[in-house]
Image: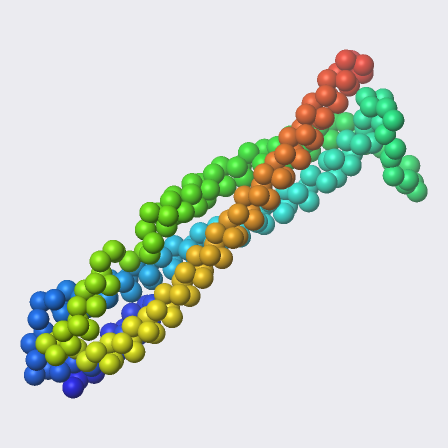
Length: 229
């Protein structure tokens, strides 16, 4: 028996071979398929890490947008009451007098709106990949090409004919299943995180659009009742 070690970025593959036996064609195809499973799993792992990182970047941008939106909403409350746009609204108590420059406020709203537009472009790109990957998973129970497992099973069934030692093959395959399972867990985490981020975006977008409409009404009120000279 000769131990052959194949370094792979996913995991090291270690198999024993009886060099006195010539590998039959089905064994060669099975091992090629086995190595290909490693390639596909590694590629998937890299893709998921890449897109999970993109979700994290969106998370940061959304958190910043939400942080910027709160003072806009608070200033709207004060401005609408102060300019008598709304009635019957009770404002929270405040200790010191303060003023809000309407022009600066409107520019703040415009800045936030543009930030949301820019964010939307990044989010849509990730949303499309999220949906396309979900569709792919729905159509393919696994990322490995269908039928490849049948090739490995043929090696086990005809163990007396093959050169690879099936005990080491079984041990190595169990380790591969562990590595593969970790990637599947990463995939689940990616989908959960995506649902969280897209839900967060929809929530902030709805709040922002309400604030923009209120700001637009405020601007019209100011232009009508306090025209600039």
